[in-house]
Amino acid sequence: MKNNNKDQLKNDYMNIVIPEELDFAVRKSLMEGKKKMNKQKYLKIIKTTAATAAVIATVFTVSINTSEALALTLSEIPVINKIVRVLTFREYKINEDTYDADIKTPAIEGLENKELESSLNEKYLEENKLLYEQFTSDMESMKANNGGHLGVDSGYVVKTDTDKILSVGRYVVNTVGSSSTTFQYDTIDKENEILITLPSLFKDESYIDVISENIKEQMLELHKIDEYNVYWIEGIEDASMAVFNKISSNQSFYISSDNKLIISFDKYEVAPGYMGVIEFEIPSDILGDVLISDEYIK
Amino acid sequence: MRTRLKLEKQYEDYVIENKEKHYRIAYSYVKNADDALDIVQEAVFKAYVSLNTLKNSEYMKTWFYRILVNSSLDFLRKQKKVVTMDEENIAAFNDCVFDEYENIDLNNALDELPDDCRSIVILRFFEDLKIEEIAQILDENVNTVKTRLYKSLNKLRIEMND
Picture 1 (cartoon, rainbow over the protein chains, first blue to last red):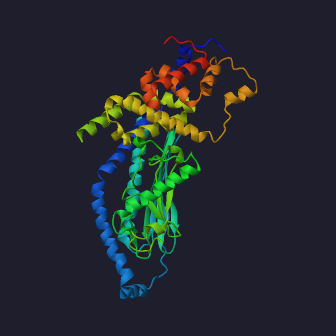
Picture 2: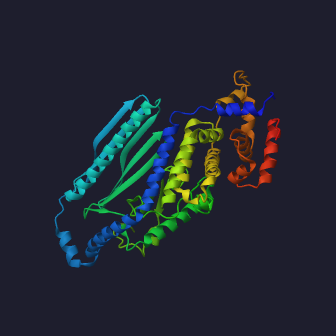
Picture 3: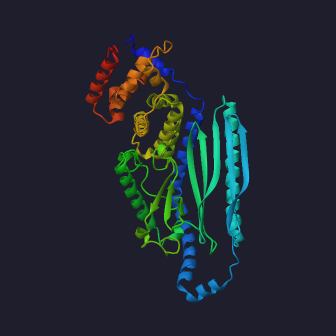
C-alpha cells in the first residue's frame, strides 16, 4: 500500500470532472419540479372544469345506453367505411454535432367531427412548435455557455386502434446527459367521435382513490417480488419521501385493445429514473362501481 | 403561501450554488458521468416536490444530502444486478500496472468499503460535514457513524488526527 493520506484522497475527489451540462441539467430539473408543483396547486381549478366535461359526456353515453329508440336511430345512420387514422404531419429536425432534435407531429384524419379533429391537430402542432422553440433557445444558451450536449426526441405511438377506440400517445424525451421522458395520451371514441377524458369515464371523483389504492397495492406487490422495483410510496420509501399518494384527476391514461384502463406515469413521476416510464393496468372489476358504463372498459 | 415561495427560492439557489458538490457525491458512488447527472437531476426534482417535508430551512443541506445519497444507493442497488467489468477491473485481472494513476489502489479500496462506510468517509472528509450531520443524513446514531468511520479509515490505512 502506498503512503496515502486524506489530502491525496480529497484531491482525487476534487478532481472529478464536472460535465458542462451540469448547470443546465439542474435548472431543467428545477423547472420540472416547479411545473409539477404548479399542477398540484391548480388541480382545484382543473377539477371543476373536468367535472363539467364529465357531465356533458355522461349525458351522451347514458342516452345511448338507455334510449332504445335513440340507439336504433343511431345504428340506422349509414356508416360509410369510416377510416380514422394517424399520420405524421410535420417533422422538425436539428442535427448539429452535439445538438439533436427530432420532433414528429402527428395528425388525426378521417373524423367527421371536424371540430374535434382540428382541435386535436392544432394542439399537437402548437405543443411541438413550443417544444422546438424551447429547444432552439436552450441550444443557443448552451452554446453561449461553453457548449454541451442536448437532445430532444418527440413522436407518437398508436397504442390502440380498434373499431371503437383510438389511443394515441405522444412522447417527449429530453436528453441532457441523462434523459427524462413524458407521455401524453389522447383517446377517441371513433364511433361517437368524442374525446374520452379520464373524469368522463366515471360517475364521480371517487375513481381517484379507487385507482390510486390499486396502483399502490400493485407497487408494493412488485416491490415484494423484486426489491429493485422501487416506487416513491409509503411502505417502500420513508414517509417523508413518499412523493406519490394519489393520481391526478387528469392522470395520463389510455384504453387498451382488450378494453382495460391503463394508467401511465412519466419518468421520475413516481419512481427513480431507472424505472423509466411506468404503466399500470387497472383491473376492470374494481372499477365496476365507479364507471359510468362498460362501454369502453370491461 | 409566501413562506412556501421563499423556501422554493432558497432551495433553487441552494441546488444551483452547490451543484458541483452534489455531482461529485453522486459521481463517487456511480463512477460515471451520465448516471451521476441522472441522479443529481432526480434528487433535485424529488426534493423540490417534497419541500413540504423540510420543516426548517436550516436543515436544507442535510435534508438534501439525504435524498441525494438515497438516490445514489437506490441506483447502485439496481445496478448490482448486472456485474460490470470496467477498464480498471480488466487491468487488475491482466496484472497490468498503471503507473500514471497513483491512486488507483486507494480508489479501489474506497470502492470496496460497504456503501454506508463509503458515504461516511465521503461526507466527513470530502464534504467536511460534522459527524452529527452525517448521522442525520444516513439516519443512524452518532456512535454508529463514529465506529464505522474509524473502521473505514483503518481499512484505508489513513492516518487521522481527529
